[in-house]
Image (cartoon, rainbow, N blue to C red; front, side, top):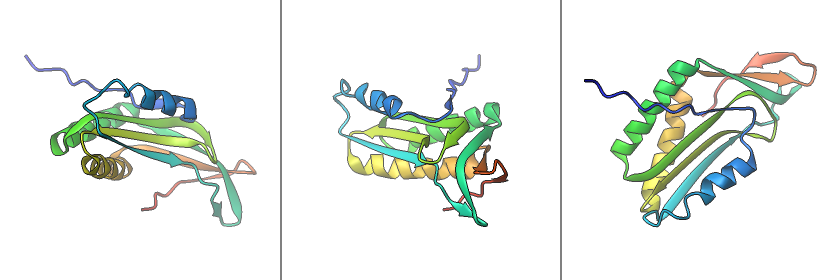
Length: 149
């Protein structure tokens, strides 16, 4: 009998709020085997592209495939690093400039594992997941976002 993969929906509609982030951190205070946390927060920038200012990004995804890839990224990180916990959340829909669209939170016994794992996970998310951002300008026109390193 095949074991069913335990995929987790990482998507949140709209921005990831400071309250959500704070609550996620607070839930880990009872886990006394953790010595380090590392957090990456991706924030929507108010870039100027061809003279127009980005006011929001509208995120879309091929959710079923993305959830599967997030699961693979998660399993690979647990296999490679000595992690205690890991959480990944990504926005769908409109996120205004200045708001959070990506939240990666890793916990381990020691800081180096947390730092290395968090950076690796973020790079894999950017490279592998089928998530697209439509950069919306003040005049409601848009361009599809091109990821930068």
